[in-house]
Image (cartoon, rainbow, N blue to C red; front, side, top):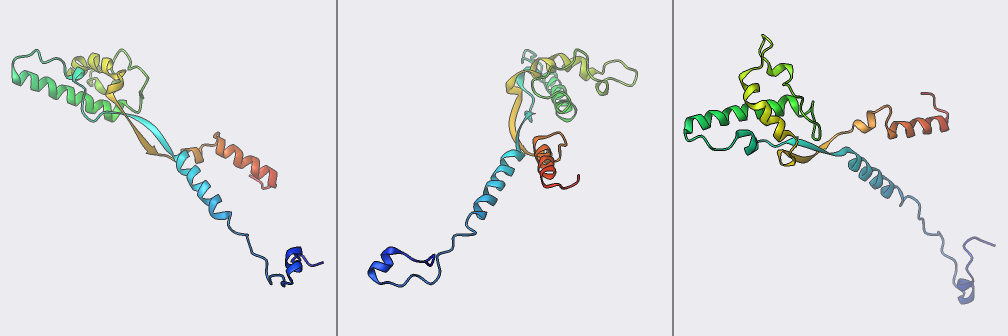
Length: 167
């Protein structure tokens, strides 16, 4: 008996269709779409970064009546905040506390603390742990693919072992 035989076609005297419908090849676009979605999902990572402008607590209260003194205090706070953005946020990420004493780059060549560190380091330590000093953003990173101890590399090694491919 032919694979194309159908009792209904036989009952009505209809010849079977010449070629059965093909269903192969429809799954690959979905597999590729799934892999692409997985790759994007794994590569977008939330990152906490310092706000671009210093918080009010770093500048200090506006108790100074002299406008030029307040502007000088504001410039000092901005310089301190820019230093924190450039050098500290990667070294001490969100959730970590700043050390009691400023790191070496904020000190003068003689080893004594610079004017900026004396004026703003205590305030910077206070605002560092406040959530409103930070902004959450997303960053593209494919480090999870390159990490030799990561889940992806371990699964890839297991697949290579299974298939007998040397490392």
